[in-house]
Image (tube, rainbow, N blue to C red; front, side, top):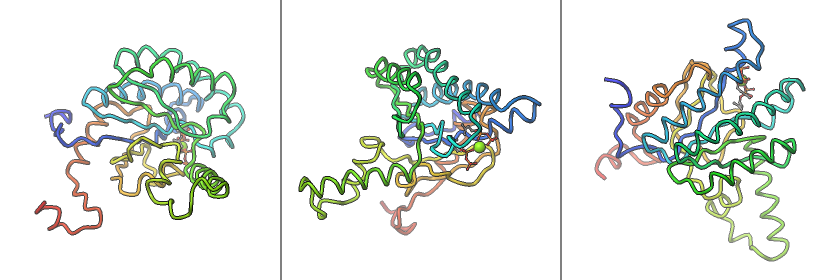
Length: 248
Ligand code: IPE
Ligand code: IPE
Ligand code: MG
């Protein structure tokens, strides 16, 4: 039986987040430039998004570029930004065809003008789609996001618009770039690295982690379905005992 058929549709994660890693190594294995790995990863994005929408996932967040990635060689950063513009332009059809809405999180103001404009265009054009939201994390880092939220909240406290007593988990969450997006239940990282790399630190408090050695350009819809099947075998206890969960 293939993995798709093993998925229990009544217990799907609502939100899956993916750290798409390994493009550079994939290209190197083929004697090619790192940028070839990035462009080859677009197919994996398309497959994953289509597969996720098809089975009924509501939010798919993809870590595409971190705040720390700005420190890569200028030529690679430029190539990634160019690829992003090209891909947004070309793949808008995939979003329309699959009823997928595009969203973005991160320090979007730090993106080059044309990248930001193309992104905004794709977000506006797909705003009416409601099968799934694909959230691109761009110039994103969790520490940036948390510090940014703390700044906004403290300014509001200073102006008297909030009091320290108003600050709780829900309020804090509402000042993150993921406001209105439920926390991911499943976090996938490709390429055999076992780290989070500054991604959604607040939001993954109770996420299940799934690591695969596959490099991102090799990741296909069946790999996503395999991760979901694995997720569904886990017992999520949220601090309670197993007996409490079973007797519910
Ligand atoms: C992930 O692949 C894509 C981005 C971070 C933009 P990498 O470029 O990190 O590939 P590796 O990890 O060097 O193989
Ligand atoms: C994480 O991958 C960021 C993205 C996938 C966009 P990196 O390749 O930048 O992470 P590290 O440097 O290996 O931790
Ligand atoms: Mg990497």
